[in-house]
Picture 1 (cartoon, rainbow, N blue to C red):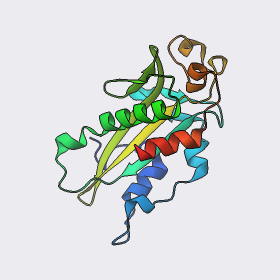
Picture 2: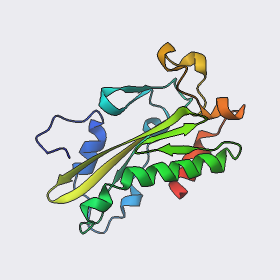
Picture 3: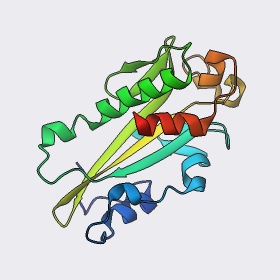
Picture 4: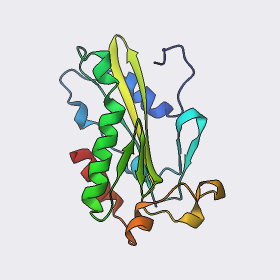
Length: 178
């Protein structure tokens, strides 16, 4: 778990938002999702310092700031990446019914033995209140020739697996609903 004295994460705008005071009675679900941040980034962060590279407007890279209840035990908070992974598998299979998405514990989604998505979580506390930033990268419509050479044998996209273009908004909505 990162302390408040740790170096800033690579998603400083989300950490600032998580640490900002929230008005009393505000529903956290009321946070605005900015279209440019949600659907337009070109690179995300992977485990062990790896990067998640994506062509503009092809894939889905996003982060959600979550505020778990104060009385949530730490062992339940540690399940968040797994729950996010299961929800993502369900969303992928809902939008792409011809594919079978499999969760490789703890944070990767595979189709036919190739990675299609990844999940990272960053937990923190501010003024005694916990927050989690759930970062997700999904290869939606990118093509093999758009990926770095070293990833072509191990990564895939939903478009490559289904043979058709996937609506990123529909996939995001399916994930949120899961």
